[in-house]
Amino acid sequence: MSTLTLAYRFAPRRRRNGLQEQRAELLLPEGVEVINPDVTAAEAVADLKTLPRGMYLMLMVTAPVMGLVFALRGPRAFLDEDLVVEDLPSTLRAELAADDPVMHAISDRRDQRLLEALGEIYTERGDEPIRVAIVYGAGHVPAIVSGLRDRYGYRPREAEWVTVLIPA
Picture 1 (cartoon, rainbow, N blue to C red):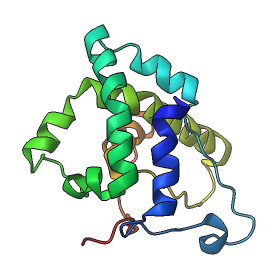
Picture 2: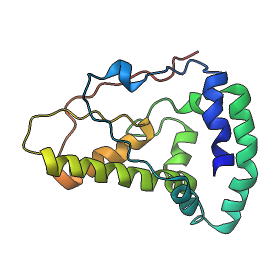
Picture 3: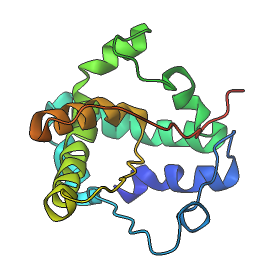
Picture 4: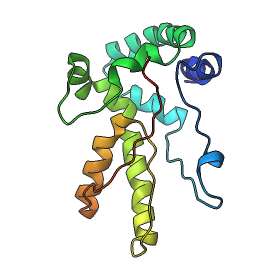
């Protein structure tokens, strides 16, 4: 997995393409706890291995090529068409991605891990009037909203969107 993510880790340093650097120590007041409920590389690979064999092999063959494109062109090569998440898909690509088994393999466990972390916060501090910032990609928002609604009856009242990519 480290080979697959190599371009992802180094491309932003080489070519930001409008990607904004937002370090926690510059944005958050001192003492604010930051939780990163993400999957390990081994878990990500295990999830990808649940794909049909042919799809998994195709992904392993194309991933280095995609990584090279990412390294040479930066994040915009893959993100420009998917900068927003709407209730109804607005592009054919978004419509196809909605039920894409690869996207489910990549995202489902991450979404579950995030909801578990939010559940721990709810259990520990549910009686306190606190604010919790969730900083994840827009593609995770539907799972977050439905998970919080189904588990705790929460409904979105307010959201603050942070610009990650400045349109070219």
